[in-house]
Structures are given as structure tokens and as C-alpha cells.
Image 1 (cartoon, rainbow, N blue to C red):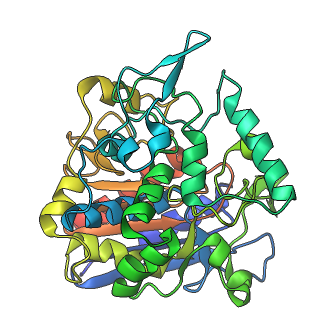
Image 2 (cartoon, helix red, strand yellow):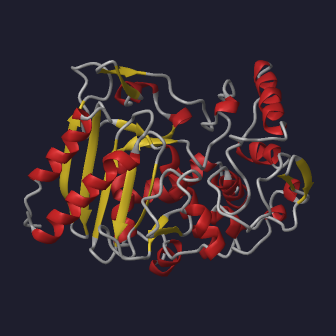
Length: 394
């Protein structure tokens, strides 16, 4: 691709200079492979610790796209129906409740697999749980861990079934634990642990040799893991990461390595994630059928659900009203000053962000580790610069 990408590298470095990231990775590609790859800055507060091709990043919510891919693979195999009720697989979800106006009431609808995929289940991240049941669960979980009795992925899903939903399933869009529960469904139907399923059916076929659930990261690779940094008093400093396996403040102290989080659990290199994006742009490895990928990236929300998606207080990862939600990914379906109709992608809590634009035949992948991520402050100029160079050649 005959373009001058120097200006894109300058914009990438500006992110560091402005205090949004101590270091970052940016890879862009098309159907012929990677045409831009650049690393800037450091992966920690140390000046002698550069970001490079071997740097591992916490993917957090960019894990969700793999969980959706796994579920859609099971759909293709005839093992999963998108319209199926969740309680067919996890009976504990048979009598879910809703917390409304200070009271708990029975939900008017059952949660379906479709609700999980589209984040319309009513499952939240319990940031404002008025019932107190999330806090009670977290406390009981901490007590179990003290005696060596933790949970597994399915056990975690069963426990949160007893916490009231934020609304009736299907009524709204809300970012939350839907894909963690979807990961439990994948385990049940495949009869494989989620880490094993990902390795056998996604990472292995794509040659992704350096992507792992955090608890499975080999000890010898840990020095390559980027630190979570923040810009404080004129310098970058390392700060503690959110709790594992699910990054919810109320769950502090529940680091349970038996739970594989389908919503936030992975770490990996940018080059590894690029292999996945290349496959989704131009399928050649048989990961998903082209028609399944098209379904995944087709707008899926109703008008009322979309109104919740475009609430910046409800979902900080959106890029504007030109975007809606498909099956686990944002989708641009309206003309805007940047981007393209059909562009789709997602992001992660510490600053990872990607898009695939089928109409332009390109993918774009950015990674850094910084709290807060501040996607809205730096992605727009970076993305606009990319498209400007792509379309003008300079």
C-alpha cells in the first residue's frame, strides 16, 4: 500500500506526550497483511522498558469478541440456538428478578442467548446494585477463597443468577456480565473449559501462540506484560490493576483463578490479535463462515435499546450516535465525519481499541495500558489521521 504513514506514527507518539499512555502499539493491515506496525514509548514507568512486538497487553473487554466467536461457532455446529432461553443451559436463571424502584420483582421475560450476545440481558457490572446481593455474593466468595473453595466459570454464572437484573431482559442495552455468562454456556455445550476451547478452536487454528487467560500466562512471559500506568505529577507511574477475574470494584479480593472470564480475562500481543482481525476481514482459516461474520457485525439493537447504547454515561466505549451494537461489537451504520458504513470493532478498559472496515478492506489495532483509558480523548484524532492518509495517500 503506497501511503505515507509517518503522520500516523507522529499522532501515535502524541498520545504519549499528552499523558494518555507511557507507551503503545499500533498495527494496521489489509487483505495482504500488515502494512503499518509501530511501537512507541515504554510499557512501564521505567525509561529502559520499551514497548515492542513481544509486549503483552491486558485485553480486558476485547476478550468479549472471542467469546462471541466461540458461541457463533457452536451455532454453526447446530449446538446452540440464538433464541434459546438461558435457563435451558443454566437452570439457576429460571426465575430471575429485577431491581426496580427500591424493590425486587420477578422479571417479565426470560434471558435468551440473543440477549447475552447483544448485552440486553439486564446483567450489569453491579456498579449501582441497590439490592445489596452483589456485595453479599462478593463477601461469601471471599470467605470461600480463604478456605480454598473457589468457583469455576459455570459456578460464577450460577451465583450471579441470584442477583437482580437492572431491567427486564430485552428492554434495554447495558454493558455488563452478559459475555461472562455466555462463556459459561460455551463451556457447558462444548464440554471444554473456556481456556481450552479458545486454544483448540480459535487461537490454535489462527496461530495465536501468545494469547492466554491471565491465570494461564507462563511465568517466564510475565516480564513482557505491560504495566497499568497513569500520568501523575508530570510523570508516568505504575498503578495496581483492577481485581481479577472480573474487574468490578465491589469484587475486590475475589481473585479466583478457577474462573475464566469470557468478558475480560485475556492477555496477548498486538501481533496475535492482528491475526484474528485479519481472519475476520478476509476469512481463510475456517474460523467462522463469512455469512456468520456478517451476522455478527450487523446492527442488532431495537430503537429503544440503541438509545441506551448511545448514552455516554452508560457505555464509555462508543464513538458517537453513528454507532450501534451488533453481536458483541459496535457497528457504524450512519454516515459521519470519519469512519465508514459497516466499520465494526470494540475496546478494552485499559486503552486497547480496534476496528475492521470491510468496505475499505482494512483493520486497525491500537493498544496501551493506562487508567483511565480515555478512549474518547485520543482515538478520534488517531482514527481520523488513519482514514485521511488511507484515502489521500499522505
